Image 1 (cartoon, rainbow, N blue to C red):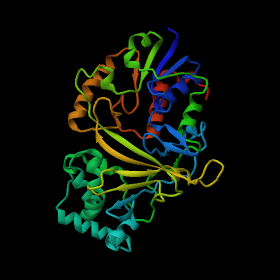
Image 2 (image 1 turned 60 degrees about the vertical axis):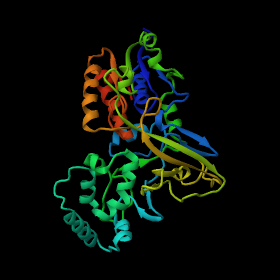
Image 3 (image 1 turned 180 degrees about the vertical axis):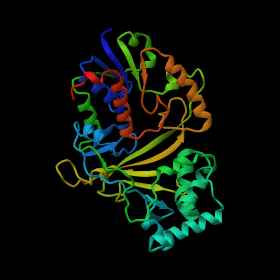
Image 4 (image 1 turned 90 degrees about the vertical axis):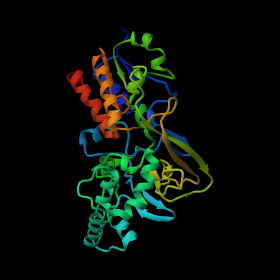
Length: 377
């Protein structure tokens, strides 16, 4: 055995575990089937703009220890996530707040907005929400649900809102203030210079091999290390022998435009059914439209996002945590627990929706249980 750990995947979970293991004096090899490190948080520089290649990522957390840890590898800017909803040319503030309620109903005070939502909730006869549609109406009323939730959500998940669990919509803040910061997080921002630079700093001094498909060369790669840390899809690890877990995938159409400003905001969600994409990201506004020297950027890069059902060969993005898939994952989890010297970690290996700070915290947690006492950090 040449290494203590073979880490499969160089996304945030793999990079965090590798960094901590290396700091504890462990020998580490990181492999990734892609030609670059960083997983889905990879950023690619185009005309001075850090383009979020696999979708927008904003780091946000209330965990001070995690925040201090990632700030060791990058300086974060003060970006505040304030998306805009576009419903057939009508623009609304997200998350749902007093700007939204005023535009929708002309509500001036929080009491007026709350009364309108309560009126629509009672009219819909909802007392104990059983699905996403009922949960959304109980939170924001029928008008906002129909214009700003239903179309976007059904495009995103490829399912009727009545068939989706209520907890999905609970992630979206509802405020009776004029605060349009999407996240309820004490710390948030984006690494200046992009996530790729941050992850490269995390992996400094660690051997990394790119373009290596672990599952194609599993037998020979397993011989290299005492323990494997696997961050890929759990069903793929076991050759899909119990069946395929379902995911939502995303396709991106990215354009470089010869203009300084396309939409004036980092994210605009298209909430009607007719528009085929779910949102448009304008990457430069994650860093205020300027390069690292503070100069205005003359061009812009946009990405239209199209949500689709995952099929073999696609990139899996969002686990479909409904009852059927949860049962199937539980069976795969039993197989994973029986694997000797293999750690399954991250969104795909645990079939769980994680925010970035949660991924880092999970990697910390497994480190605490294995080699934390040897760490000097």
